[in-house]
Amino acid sequence: MLKTYAELSLAMFRTGILGYGGGPSTVPLIRHEAVSRYRWMADEEFGEVLAIANTLPGPIATKLAAYLGYRLKGTLGALVGLLAHILPTAVAMIALVSFIDVFSSSRIIHGMIEAVVPVVAVMLGQMCYEFGEKAVKGLGKYMALACGVIAFVLLEWVQLHPAILIAIALAYGSVHFIVMGKLKETRKRKEERRHGDMD
Image (tube, rainbow, N blue to C red; front, side, top):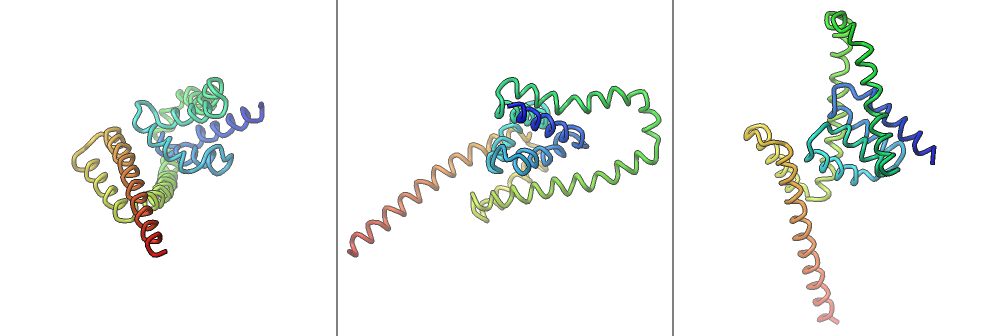
């Protein structure tokens, strides 16, 4: 029992302290802890949780930390996960606030920031590629590509709010899989009838 709390605290501490750049850069770290390191959930479930969390208001990383804690140990787990995730950076911010003027003009700090940005970009790109593979498996190559293009157009050109787009995608996905399931059943019945007639 205590081992789970310790693992949860350590995992959320790592994501909180290493998640440079806010929520989006923290998501791959949380995914690594929850899916790869501790195997608290499957990759597919993490994708579903991430999609739902994106439709809700508030920082994505704290929602994921609280959800993981709740999934493992209920309300107390949610509190532990949330505190372990936000406390390290909150304490660091308070401790370093008096030195903010020095840091803002420091070439070393600017160099550190510039070096971290490409690493965060690669982490996000890797996660996008893996989610893209899942989309192709679930929707098919052409439908996944069409959904990606439509999402890009709606986000970049129409300036649709991401939460609205995610809600639309969730609604479409549910309809898509219901329709595809019925089509598969119909094809299966036809094949069974053909085999029955041949016999």
